[in-house]
Amino acid sequence: MSEPPFVWLLGSTPRDANSSMLGKFKRDGVSQGDPMYALEAEPAIKLHHARGRWWIGRQPGKWSGAMYCEDKATSPADITGEWLVYTGEWEPAPELKCTAVDPLAGAADVLYVIGKTPEDINTSALGRFERTKQQVTSRYVYKCPDGIKLFFAFGYWWIGRKLPSERGAGGVFRAASSAWAPEGLESWEVAGSSGFSAAPDVKAVLDVPLPPDPRADGKFVDDEFPPERGSIGKAKGWAAAEQVDCWLRAPADDLFEKIGPEGLLQGAIGDCWFMAALACVSEFPELIESLFKEESAWSTWPSWCRHSWPAEAHETASEDLRLLYARGRRGVSPQTPPRGRGLSARGRPS
Image 1 (cartoon, rainbow, N blue to C red):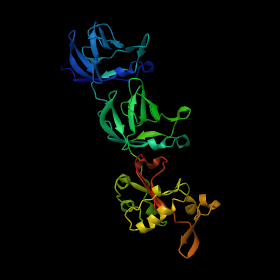
Image 2 (image 1 turned 30 degrees about the horizontal axis):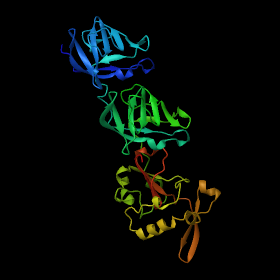
Image 3 (image 1 turned 90 degrees about the horizontal axis):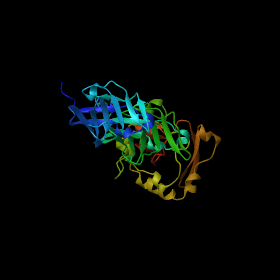
Image 4 (image 1 turned 135 degrees about the horizontal axis):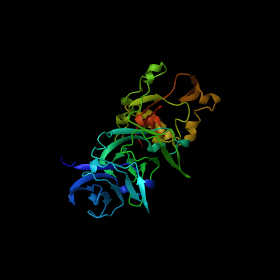
């Protein structure tokens, strides 16, 4: 029987001791008559057999290493004994297993990390992640369009901008798990001012259910500004239209966090004259604020708005006239979206 070209040492070690030596091993010759393998991430680390033990270490053929298993198997794929890991003393690692089956074979091309965090901390780091060809500790690195990464290191799956170094790893989210793929992870923690805290509503999933089309609820829809990609437009450097895959009714409050020209986007509608005027006026937020009356009904609707036009001003109240905004699949978590003309587009992480 021929030896497998690759084997994987999977599982966890006590307190993650020497966990950087786990992963994918490639066939690398023979040691004392038995097959030897080298860790792909660091070829100097070998999986070899010596005097009745399978070792993980840097000295092939010798009774030396950071972990070993007492087993007479002639191939590491056939090892059934319990591994021991050196942590200052030899400790059993019952979860360690050696296999010739690729644990990454079924890794998803795309996944989503979604959910609500305490006080909405770091929700902008959640969203849609695509699998890259890059690997860290023999696991795939996943990436958002804006560069935020999802990766495994030192016993955790992390979400952050920087990949780990020999000194450690970090990020704004982490989940303690030695899983070979992040889908299904639910034990997430989020970084805050006092360290990491539990974020029980955050989870990694393969798909995000989309809400129904807002036009189906019978409420008002502006025919000149419908919930369609054309309304967002294709301004230079603006990729929102390609990133949006559903539309929602806007919340009753807090749609706009601040007033300024950066909150405007003309989209595909020929109203540059109006948008330009609004952009100018928005340089003076108090003028925009003066168009709205603060009423207790604001949070529950109807909402009151004063429309100012040359030579006239009037007030309107409407139960149905709710704004629409578009979102990408990352939009399950709160985030401040780009805005424009009664419609805000929420896309992938920004």
